[in-house]
Length: 218
Image 1 (cartoon, helix red, strand yellow):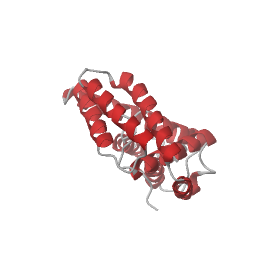
Image 2 (image 1 turned 120 degrees about the horizontal axis):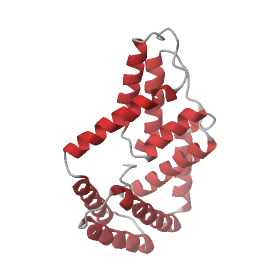
Image 3 (image 1 turned 180 degrees about the vertical axis):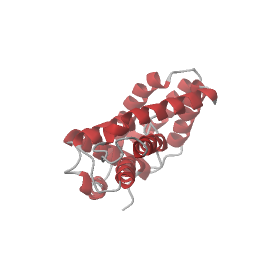
């Protein structure tokens, strides 16, 4: 089964790091926690992979190149450098406030085009869409908007779950657990639980044609 974008982020980082190292060393608990921090911090996958590649390229030309890189944490500084380059590129392009407003309008359009919802979830969706359009008219820092989006999404998910057929929720759990089976014993329990919850939320929203209400988990 194809992993959702949230789940595949973790898989892609591990597979890229392992392939570039040249031997099958899997990630440690500390490494998974680091990947989780990048993910929830909104760092795009391509930026993370660029940083990992830069770190391992640098190691390949260093005096210590005969020693294997033992942890993803070796790449942390280069990933941070890649983040800084990405942030500068964003600043040189569209204004941050404009990008946030555009994202809020996209969320509103998604909510307005949702389907198959019960009355409670449909009302919640309409109210959120209206509030999103109002918020989009005001310039806002994404770091201020994100907590509000998280709260709104939690209310919508609660309504969708309350009105969902129990079998559909069980099917989602089965599918997510099957997708993540290889990681259950290798991820720290807290990280695994959050990745699993992300997958369940994404599937529930997608069933109704909706998207995650997050500027960072898109």
